[in-house]
Image 1 (tube, rainbow, N blue to C red):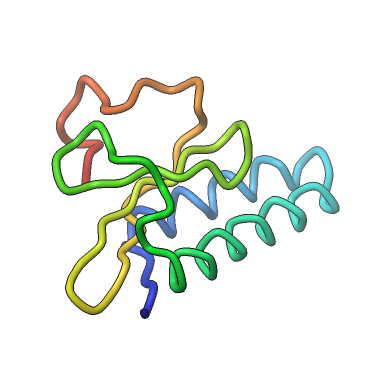
Image 2: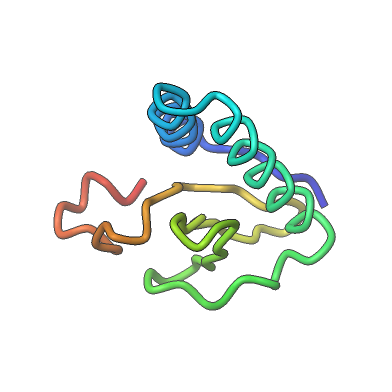
Length: 98
């Protein structure tokens, strides 16, 4: 199954990796690799994450500090967001959900 990243998920990922990079380029590269590994696993096992808090979504923890929100469509998995686990999900502001 194909896996795609939404624009906002790409932006989430860039922001996370960019922030970590400021403190440790090595840790940033490792985190990015974990995100890639999670996406690869979803291609083979799209229902491996738990049922999400928002209808039609699922959630996977590629790292204990990050929650990957995704949906499973007929022929692909779409990664919708990546959040730090300390952040409220779903957010109180509906503009952050998509």
